[in-house]
Length: 387
Image (cartoon, rainbow, N blue to C red; front, side):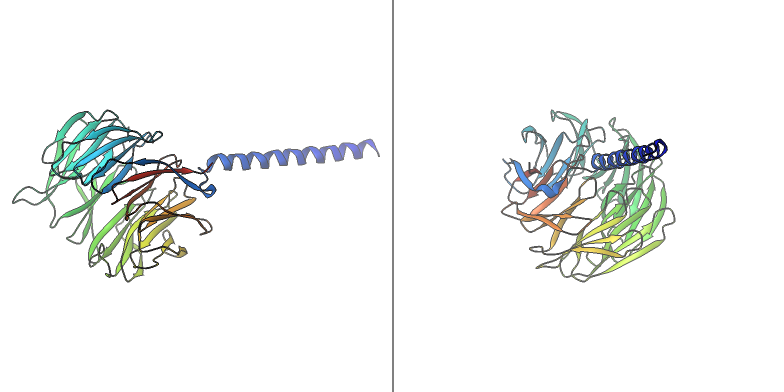
């Protein structure tokens, strides 16, 4: 073999080795970017007990270290996620906490009950402050500088209030924000605005700094749950005559936030639906039917509204759903069990009977390594990937 031919083949071999190394690096990077692999199986690692009544909500702190549970026995708890140990019991409530949320820096926990927002230090549970006449419904701005609340004074209108956090300084009050009860408050991901929904048949967008009204969106019937897309470009809401009830038809409506124009309406939920959620990349919207006896969850393309796939085989109506932080998995709750799905293939990975009564919440931790389920059986459970 000639020297020139040997050099040529060596050069080709060198290029092949470079290509293989590049492809291995790409594969390794993709593996690093992907989150925890829930297809390996799900196992329980902690049961959070000691509650006298049902648990109505569960929220992870943004840093993933803590979990708060709101209970119907007029209590809330702060738990350590890794150990499953209770760190603090919060007891100064006049009713069960209607709203709970950690501040974006995970330093504080806010709870809403009977016209007040109470602020607690994390993880000690020490009382920090009380926002009087703030209302039980609130939402933190993404940077944690403001708290938007709704309040209904005796004989007055349905107010919106903006507070400076954590000082408690009242920045602004909108005396008549809506004509009927305000159901939900949610900030856009960039914090430039927040939205409110009401039984008066409107969604309203408010400036995130001045609390001035930006736009009013009229809807069909009354709004149910709504959510901003992760990029803040779209707003999706469940709408209908009574979107939270059984056997009432509902639709999902998607608007362009910048223009307020309706982009698409997804119909066909003749028995209603409750949960909706955008995928973390904003490309899809998941819905869960309230149809009794074998309801399905569905995945819709954003913004076209095209049906991508369905997740069928639930025990009852789909009451809760949550995407893993990387979007590869979807957990759906139905009756006393939950199911883990592969979102790319629609494959059912595992169904677990988690509780003795119906699920009230299902959520992934921010890093995707933990899943929490809560129930009216007075317990919460923490789940991890099977080793």
